[in-house]
Amino acid sequence: MDTKRIIYQTALLLFMLVFLCSCFNLNIIKNVKSPDKYFRKAYRQIEEIHKKYPRRNGQAHTLHVWIYDGKGRKLIRASAPILIVNHVMDSGVDTDRVDQEFDFEEKYDIDWDGIKDLDQFGPGLLFELDDEKSRILIWLE
Image (cartoon, rainbow, N blue to C red):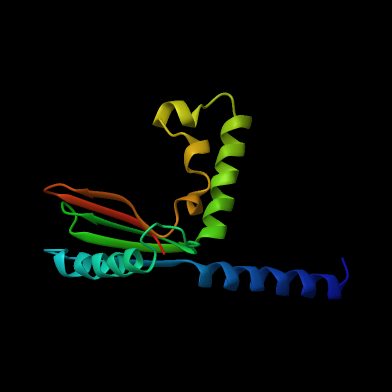
């Protein structure tokens, strides 16, 4: 392999790594006794989204997922662009259909076709769970 090609491939790989790392936001906060102050901030963001798009007819660009593990006292906050999420979901659908030995859809009761295009739901709250030990909040912005 010639040197120019190696340099080009290395530069392309570095660009892709930087691009993908800048697209995702992952934050883990440890030793959280009460996640209320964090989740209030998220609910305010969601409320603003619902005011701006009361009929959820806007275009969603970002998926946000917040998970609080009360047992481990950790708050995990993640966000990713919808385009990348949809690409990953499409890959999951393709993998599930190709790999007949392991039926992911049946084992985990996931309907890939129902959730593979998340942006169809428009901006706003997608899922909320709040029990005594855990909290999950998923929304589109």
